[in-house]
Image (cartoon, rainbow, N blue to C red):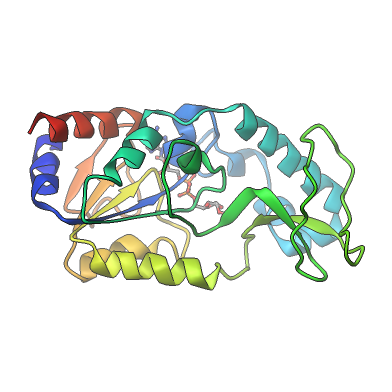
Length: 243
Ligand code: OAD
């Protein structure tokens, strides 16, 4: 299967990728919907919604500080690095991620489309101003906006919130342009991101999934590489370089 994918990639000029939590799994960052994932232990409506934040900002802030600490101590894995390398191999390349951990950036990817925001930055819920002071991950106190005194929240997209329009437009453009589209490490259950691979295939792309498990997309893809991304992607790179 991976040899066939390499063969297709050798001929391709325009490639786009959508990633999800699975690409960071081998960096030690928990996914959401796997049996040991975050949503098996925590309630998303309590911790990842504006309603949850308004009813208990301290709890939500501490949960994000806890996740930030894990992410700060994690390193990009071979899958992130392979994706960063792919960027240089094609005439057109686009990477959209649902991840907020910035590990793609740290692996060297440029122009990462962040569909769900990022966990590093913060902004004010009242005036929208970004909070520029450095956040110490050990600090549990809730920061207040320096301009208006409003409550500061993490710059991630919560349930019930719109995705950043510019990011979504760019990601849809990529799924329209791509000849080959990869869905990597995502359960492909959360919309609108989950529509991107489907949109790519509707627009003629060869759709490839890299995921050790079955997903909502698995029955729809042209090729499925049922391996962890930190294993499959370096293998794919090696095959491409052998050419
Ligand atoms: P999920 O937790 O829903 O799915 C993770 C996927 O990664 C699953 O299909 C796993 O099989 C797969 N996986 C696990 N280990 C892997 C590995 N080593 N290599 C490749 N794949 C692996 O995560 P997402 O699809 O990213 O949104 O979830 C989408 C959104 O739901 C997240 O961005 C988050 C969450 O609620 C917000 O917080 C807004």
